[in-house]
Amino acid sequence: MKKNTIKWAMYLNYFVFAILLNSVGIVILKAQRNYGVDELEASILEAFKDLPIAIVSFLVASFLPRIGYKRAMLIGLGLVYIACITMYFGNSFATAKLLFATVGVSFALIKVSVYSLIGRVTESQQEHNSLMSSIEGVFMIGIALAYFLFPAFNSETDPNAWLNVYWLLAGISGVSFAFLFLAKSESQVEVTGVNLFDDFKQMFQLMAKLLTIVFVISAFLFVMIEQGIMSWLPTFNSKVLHLTENISIMMASILAISLAVGRLAAGFLTKKINWIWILSACIIIAMLIVIFVLPKAVGLEVKTITSLSDIPLIGFAFPLVGLFIAPIYPLLNSVVLSALPKSLHSSMTGLIVVFSALGGTLGSRIIGYLFKNEGPENAFYYTLIPMLLLLFSFFILKKLTTTR
Image 1 (cartoon, rainbow, N blue to C red):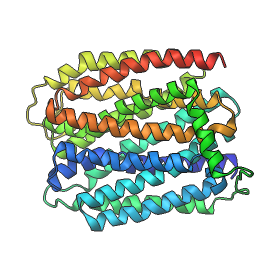
Image 2: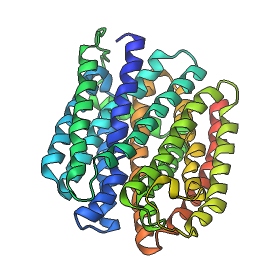
Image 3: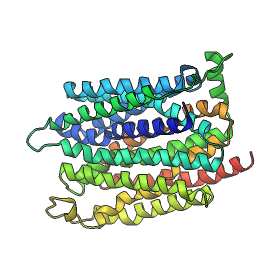
Image 4: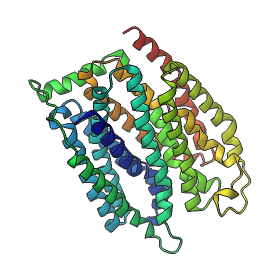
C-alpha cells in the first residue's frame, strides 16, 4: 500500500477499535445494572479483552509480515463486525465476554500491523514520534466518542435500548473493512527463509535485552494506570459523585478527550523538547492531581444533578489527569522502536501489545478489587505506586537508548 493510504487506513482502523475496546468501562457499568453482577465479577471483562490481545500478539507478531498487514487488518475488522451483531442478539454477560474476546483477538492483528507499518512509512525518530502520537491521539478521540455514543442509545424506560449502538458499530466496522479492501496495494510484504521456531527465538532474544525488559515493565505500569482509571471512571462517577448513568458515562469522556489532546500535543512538542523532560513533567503533574485534586472530588457534596452544567468545576478536574499521562505510552513505544532495526519492529510490537494487555487486565482487576474492598472513594489513590515506579523507569530508558 502507498504511504498515504497506509496512514489513512491506520487512522481509521484505530478509530474503530478505540470505540469498541474502551467501551469496556461502560459495559462494566451496564453489566452491574442489567446482568446482576458485582464489581469484581464485572471486571473480568477487561481480562476477556486483554488476554486474547496478549496471546494472539505473542503468537503472530514475528511472522505477521508473511500473512500480510492488509490481510491481517481485514480479518480483524471482519471478526468485530460479526461480534457486534452477536452482542445485539445475545444480550447477556456471557455475550459481552465473547464480544470483548473477539475484539481482543482482532485488535492484536490491527495493532501489530499498525505499529510495524509506522516504522516503514517514517524516516526519522522525530517523524516516528510524531506519527505514533498522532495515531494514538486519534485512538483517544474514538474513545471520547464512545462516551457519547452509548448514552445516545440509552433509555431510562427500555433497559435494552443501549444495544442498538452495536448496529452502528457493526456499520462503522463494515465501512472500515470496505475502505481497506478497496485500497490499492502493492505486493504483500513477505519474509522468507524464516520458520516458526526462528520467529519465537527472535522474540525471546529481544526479551533478554535489558532495554526490552525495562521497556515492557514501563509499558505494563502505564497501561495498568490508564486502563485502571478509564475502565472504572464511569463507576466512580456513579457511586462517588452520585451522577445518573448517562451523565456518569459522558463525564468519563473528559478523560478520553484529555488523553486525545495530550497525545496530539505530544506529537508537536517532541519536535522541540526531548522526550525525557516531557514525560517526567507529565508524570509528576499527574501524581500531584491524584494527591491534591482527587480528595476534593471525593469530598464533593453533590446536590441534584440533571445535566453536565450542574456539576461543580472540581468534579471535572480529576479526569484532566489524562492530559498528563497521555504522552507516556506513544512516546515510550516510539523511543524503543526507533532504537531497534526495522526488521525487529514486528517482534517488538508483539511484546508491546502482550505486556500492555497484561497491564490493562491487572490494572482493571486491581481497581475492581479496591472498589469492592477499599471503597470507590479510595481506589484511585493506589495509582500513585505505579506512577512513581514509572518515573524511575524513564531515566533508565533514557540512559539505555542514548548509549546505543
